[in-house]
Length: 225
Image 1: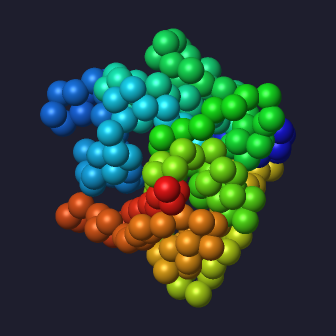
Image 2 (image 1 turned 45 degrees about the horizontal axis):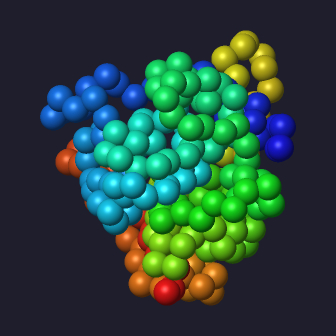
């Protein structure tokens, strides 16, 4: 377990209120790929998830995971932060969530799960070295299984690869904590997925809603049959 990363994500989790009780349509669960509420595509990107085994890498406080389970998926969520896992269990005690780093969970040899879909929304796909994560995801997908993830586009043009993300504890005078994220434009992400054995790869930036400046990078690929 990456203890420093877990502490940093605890700070993040403690600063967030969690998903609201209802969205604009009045639904109690929903899927959101973007950082903007009630905006962008939904869970259909993952294919038919009814009865499917699905894995959420970096499930946070469990909002997307809860929606998939409500639709009939056999879903597991993994998050490195004890705070986030506790929030999920408090609000949705029926969910199967594990406190573990994504790459450690995927690499574990004490289970033989394979998944119809693996996804990450502003989660582990952004904050784990893709050289480590992509082969593990590919190995754990069934043939034809979907891998999809989203996060912010690179903040600075020309500044790609591992970057530092700062988490500031609320205590006065506390030292900030840092985690690494991996920033790439759509084309390099598509190339990396292709090299890892994924087919039908797409990578695009979803435009933000009116009045907002930052879009959302969405990448998806399929494990070849």
